[in-house]
Image (cartoon, rainbow, N blue to C red; front, side, top):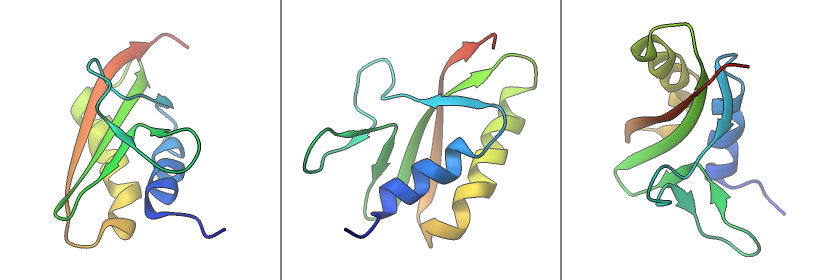
Length: 91
């Protein structure tokens, strides 16, 4: 089975050293529905991508968000990228 765009975006976001996990966010809306369990933490729309992350405490959050954007941008085409930092981890 081919890897979906959402799966590739999730993999790229998790490659950021400051991202500890993906999250659907406080309202559980950042996810991709698919056969089997939903993919938590990535929503792919026609004109935008949303990625929900939990990040390590320590660095400025805007810098971490930009790092995630930089990692996923090659996959997203012209779509606007929104990064939701939903929580901080101390690990």
